[in-house]
Amino acid sequence: MGGCFSDVRGGKDAVGGALPRPTEPNAKNDGAHNDAIEFFYREHGAYPLFTQLELSFSASKLLDLDVTSKSDPMVVVYLKKNDGKLEELGRTEVILNNLNPVWIQKVSVAYQFEMVQNLIFRVYDVDTQYHNVPVKTLNLRDQEFLGEGSCVLSEIVTKQNRSLTLTLKGKNGHGGLRNFGTLTVHAEETIASRSAVEIKFRCAHLDNKDLFSKSDPFLRISRTVETGGSIPICKTEVVDNNLNPTWKPLCLSMQQFGSKDTPLVIECFDFNSDGNHVLIGKLQKSVADLEKLFKEKSGVNFFIPSSRADHEKVLKGQLFVDQFCEKEQFSFVDYISSGFELNFMVAVDFTGSNGDPRKPESLHHIDPYGRLNSYQQAITEVGQVIQFYDADKSFPAWGFGGRTANGTVSHCFNLNGNASESEVVGVEGIMAAYANALRNVALSGPTLFGQVVNRAAEIAASSLSSNNNKYYVLLIITDGILTDLQETKDALVRASNLPLSILIVGVGNADFKQMEILDADNGQRLESSTGRIATRDIVQFVPMRDVQSGQISVVQGLLEELPGQFLSYMRSMDIKPLTFNAAAQASTA
Image (cartoon, rainbow, N blue to C red; front, side):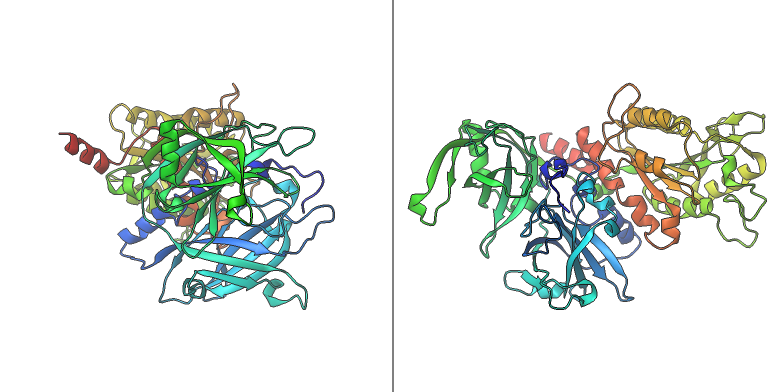
């Protein structure tokens, strides 16, 4: 679904090695399985025995379903469960106008040798109107199907080169004699290492490949593998119309580059929207070589490869390393296991749109037979997970949009009815305070988030002066449409540089488009009324109807982005795990 008038901005973005933004896939959980979920299960006695693998993909001779250009393919990976249902494991990026793509974005999978793990790979042609949308938010029903392949994970792992080429077929094996092309899947074991390097590249005097303007260069970096060939690990963004470009810093983990002595192939291309990128030049250097270039402040020339090594054409264009910094990248588990806490707070919607609590159809109706309403279910299931990370299990609990005993409508009142103390003990305390509030607070409105967000931000800000090992999570449960959308945006932007994340659970069947705006999964950070841009994304929205329909679990919905939000704060503030700080102090003593 490419097209002559395609919006190509999405195709010009960096992939795989750019400094992670909270809305990007690799910002979720360090590019691997969700270690917050793993830690939660481990502490509950579940010890998964697995090897973490990364799958990378390339394809050949894909179907071309476009009239004026080539297909824009993306791979979606599924695990087929015992009941036949498919669990999505991940998606690659979209590659523009290419029937023989090599994707950079990897998909992580936990390999369990004692289990038969059936994988299904589906390739889609992504419509041009979605090219600037994060791939995880794409509705696959809106994309054109290009073919699928399947295998057992052990089939890939047992190959000598850990690569398996699948002949793509129509959905569920149908498609007759039509040629859907092939998909090659390569598996590599994830290297457990915190080591990373931040590198800033610059080029000078690149050859111009355009007739009426200058080239639009980008770098693609690949790691050579023992079995021969190379695997792309990242690419820079495209710099338009520039023969002396400087790119944003790349952050490469040892997991990506292997070791400092592993040869890396660095290729410079001139970006073309039709997918036929023109090679400007290439070279081969290791991370250690790049560090030497930085220290010596020298450049290295690109060359154009030839079938004969002695005929390679050395170019005047050079690559420079303007910044090289080694660093340790700690995981969510590193912080939590060292003593960092997630402090839980909750705010419940008491607006009239929930319906009279005395009537069974009300979202606030408390069933006499013990069945939980949507609010109780959200409090229980979300609270049981978050309270695990909170040492004293004393939680501030508020209501908003209700008329309290003094006759005034409040948009941040203590759920327990205590004017001076908002904290309750445990999830049971929240449930009891909620039930008590329903007897003493009249539903009113409108739906305003600003005051509870500001109250949570005050608590998070006050912790900075005394203790920096706390991170706060505010759960807002609501059924409605915001009346103060801009005020809420302003409050979230102000709170974006604090140790705070906000989880919004939508109950009922309302239109939750506003919540998706606050979630910022469209790649655009929130902007305040004064033009200030949020430092980071701190909101995660989960519709309860998706949980109740079995599309996601509450644990998955809750923790999907939380580790990335937590890490983005810790890294931006250069806060290290407590055990690391203690070890560092001991070594200097």
